[in-house]
View 1 (tube, rainbow, N blue to C red):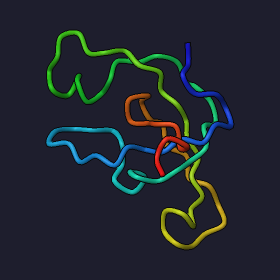
View 2: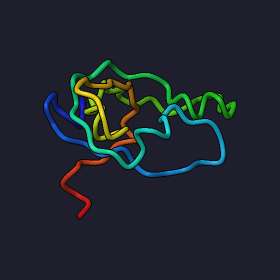
View 3: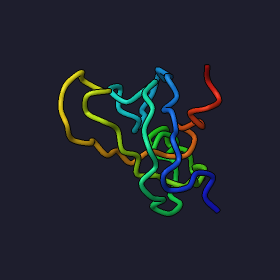
View 4: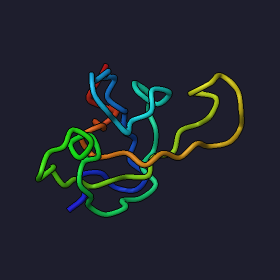
Length: 93
């Protein structure tokens, strides 16, 4: 079951891990809108670390306003992000 619903606002956790992550720096700490869930997939970070049985999490397509990421643009940028990269936007003040 998906934790986030289409249309829900989420924030990408502002983390800077030592190893591999599929959360691009340009979206970390930013708020976007869930477009849809893409199913459950092994966590890429743990696969890259060589874990034999990485956690399986829901991957979400999240849309961000380009102006929120770069200060300009009228288009949206979509990024596929694992559930553990996200938190509900309303949780942080």
